[in-house]
Image (cartoon, one colour):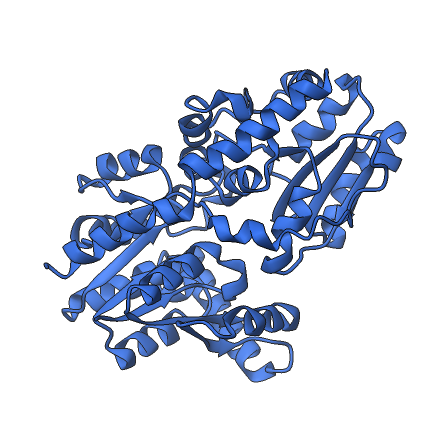
Length: 409
């Protein structure tokens, strides 16, 4: 069996897709090591709990925790110098793509894996360098990195360099994954490359056995509950539309948001909150992977309010939509190309609405909550669709076939 190295850009507990990839490949008998970076002590502890008793292993390339002051200062200085050189002189360096790109390459060269799979912007550069030296490389386009920001944020980004890195990997890597058929088709067309293998961001059926059936988020169980989550609560994630929709919702309910909530986000969000809704909106911090499904499953409706004006966001299908199905929630999703790929086929799970339309969002909520039967029918359909169509177990064969193709046997 193969020696496989998976490279990610952060903590393993914040990377569910590489976790499932590592688990699947290790269960198939491969020797799997995941390497990333440590930043936050709480996430480091979650990493340690997550990797206990796994067949695969994880280790940080660099520890950026506050106690590691030298690592923080040195690498952050490199990143700052890289940005200044690019902005002033247009000079590209790998430090533009994330902390520790050169250290990531050094680890990959030392490991000498039979297959190195990259998942991040820095990984794109590392993958190209490995191809130069004759190593076998795989890539997972979790995002279309060169198409992942609004126009106003792109001027300081090395867009052309990212496209060059992406193009070569898309053309030359036999092991090439992405998250939806919409994104796979777009990548193939943009880079004149074979269509990547689609592996949806779905989850194992076995995780449902971990649901604790407790109500830790909700305050009034007599009210229906709407849930949204992301790594960070902030602008550009559809919450503006949600808060604008509140004026048009005619059924009392609770709204629960989960994610990191820095002071800058609080100052942005509080002015958006109508006074009459303040007692029905609740902010929750992130929880360990093992608890997230339980907290989602407390609620009734899951919101996937992705934007369509950013190509990468428009084309992908994110984790949250599939976790709502896994938890058995009715789903309200914006009509991005990726989300239409799911809800146009399985419309019984909830509502597909236009992007950035608060009136349509409010109407979708009102319609689902119009009668208990309407909501319950959508929730039952959601869980049934998960079990029949979107289990991780159904993705395993695709990965196994891809490994056979990659190694030519």
